[in-house]
Image (tube, rainbow, N blue to C red):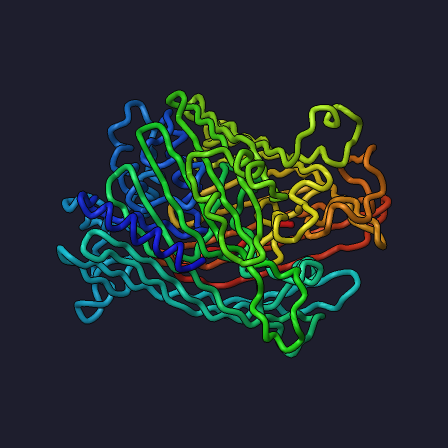
Length: 569
């Protein structure tokens, strides 16, 4: 499979050598406040960007730089001093893609030994007409405490060290890699979630120190790496290990970054208001039993994904997508799914296959330079006759709707967001582990899997340039399984086994639990991308009207060139 991916990438490279665009499509990192800041500026501008389509993440650094350069040309946009500071911050982060006359903004006042930190965001960089490289350190150190009604207070810690390297070779090929070595503890609710899934959020497989499943202290590696090729401003290709996020919300039911990075080949076509995005990915199926001595490689499963979206109006974006999850006995990606301009349902029928295909749409509507309405919908199975019947188990669908409101009631830098998500029982499940919506034990979409409905409220407030405050409140209802009965909430389970009934199924069936979670977070930037963080989280779980879990988490830390990974479930 890797040989075929590489051969395809090499072929595209040869074809593209006839015309080379000026920069390769490097991506901005995830888990940063950059995306919220860009979102604010786009809403304020009164029109959607054609530089990037903000419901497809991560963004290309070049596209961010182009967007920032155009902000000042927009009429009647209200840019206050803190917005201006944020624009400068984003420009420094992506300085190599600015116009040459503007790159001075990233210059350090006092470089170390003339070559260290010449630029505020690069420990070291070198740039000439043929080669460009940027090296930055990564670290995150922190502590805290976690307590529950049933367990004594336990210390929390994180210890992350690493490096990030990106660059361009010959203005034809770009590259990016980051690597971290980590040790961390787990709050009780993260521990329980991880043990149930036999995996860990954002990283997948990790080593548990001393095999202690109570403390669940982890020792693990984090890494992403890819090469990019952009033959023209209309086409971009990427190959390597990375993540994706489709949507404008806190959550995504289509494709999120909650699971581990995965090997993928991406092809993006951008023609003005239209963007067409393809992902062909090799995933990991950790559900298939392996020998105790681990002498057999973890088997692969595959995903093919198309997303077509267009700025229908200057402030309205609509997207359509299709996704198919599948596996093959020979462990090779089925080339029938590589065709980027064919309906997967046709391919699935042509092959006579039992692969799992999903279709859906997403949208975003910005209005009054203060609001953004967004949403998603996906359908996992459709039978017109059965769909009308009450609670048919195969009525598998999920949806999202949300609203953002910036500068609330005229208060500068105070932004609100409200969001509703749901997934009916058995959505994203299948009768085979190779075709469910799971990668390395974690959902590819929403963190809660299926059989839930969720309300979410968030505020972001930036009272000064360097201080960011964020509060999140989440309340959800989810149905859990009991004994051997499959109520449709665990998307790793075979959906042909253990169903209580083919009809009468509803959200929350099974052991219904109500979870309320609140988090307050503050971050202060000491220098570019160096943050001091304080976080407090409270989580309450109720079952049959009685509290069964009550948990408090307090954390503090310092991080550099590293985002905060949210554990909000």
